[in-house]
Image: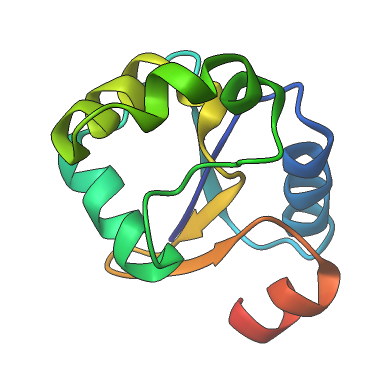
Length: 112
């Protein structure tokens, strides 16, 4: 079973959901507006992402950049948990592995 983490009104997330639905690939959607990722989630995603999974081109990061960048690593994780719109999305996982950040048909065709 796949898990797709994101925000429902994000266009990239919508495209990923549509792709999975059209391919009849079963997945569970985890809405960051209803689910706060655990520290363990963020650490796992960080290993795959090569750093904290922050969308540095997003509006939320730009709004809080100065505050965020001054935080310790632990403080940044807590800040991400409180401001989930900062997370690079969507995040596609299976039960044990992070498979993809973001969405493109080519990327998903390679991992699902």
